[in-house]
Image (cartoon, rainbow, N blue to C red; front, side, top):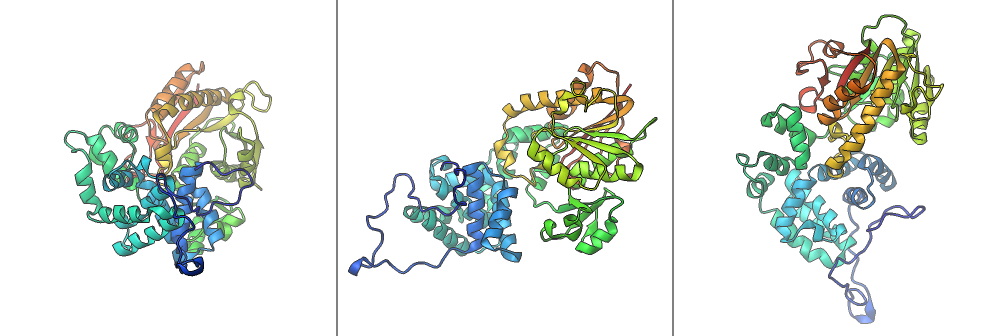
Length: 492
């Protein structure tokens, strides 16, 4: 289906005949007077919401974390119904690769040849059959009802496909369809744990070729991640925040609180700006820069890629305690506005400009800042738990333009920092091309003397699995965080 036009009404369940079928002329009838047959009960709203979210992701290139809350609100779903719709949406998107392989086998045709509305409905139905406790008969009948609403002529096809899916559990399907681990470990892990093969290879390389640990990472990527809050220092104590939300303080970040459930936007401390939603790994890398020992002045901090503002908010709160100021740069105006909202009341100045303009714009002079954060745009492979659709959208061809931008931004940061000052290079990706290769190449090309600072002592004592240094790679399966990479450099 085509993308929704500007101003068009919100996505709805469209009654569409699948390719190769025709609806019966005049529609179904009871005969006398052409009266319609009794209308079936309406679709249950959680499944309808999940379908609309999954369809929007595939039809409109939408992001589930943005469209699903809107759909839930418009459907009036809360509590258990909202949780079920969320589970169906994110679970289907996480397991998409494996589900599609199973549906291809069950349907006897590639999923690409199935009409998109039917395909998305079948994906949701297969997820229920293979990954939830929904009884098989309920998963099949509810999905057939969904197909009846979006493609009436395909109900028999959908029923047959789902009954075939139900003949095996997910382990049985993997055993049947995945290549052997002994001869094709990447292909096996890819199908077993629903990640594209190129991402499996990248993760394995970053983990030193350890396939067992790679499998544990892939498994963790498919789990629903907890919501982490950041208690802004000086504004609210994390223990107090944990008590208020019924959660627990984080395992590593001194500012982290784990939210046990509910909408984080309803937390009073989030509403009034004393806390914000932020993965614990992001908190750790930002606070590592702020806490790193520094000789000389320490009042001018720079966040060179600040949108949407989580790290700028934490740095701003820390700066307020230390008499420092943060300059937050964001090239996209709408994201710069988000940074302004996220840092309201903090000593943060937001500039809507390109961070690479250091030295070419008087607002970003060279050799001026004491601490600089480069949270560089990246593939986002480290946050696939939270944005599962990204694993299917990203391609290896995305890397060259991204790594070029990363090197340019890090080079700009090294120009912006004063001699003796610190730069933290951060990506939410473990891909070695975006981490070690980018940072070493940018340092080599910078034209200024650069020393690597061992980042491990800048993280909380006792954190496991930090490697040999001087850089640090965090992992979901080791630390319960997004896979954040951190390199700290000191300009000579």
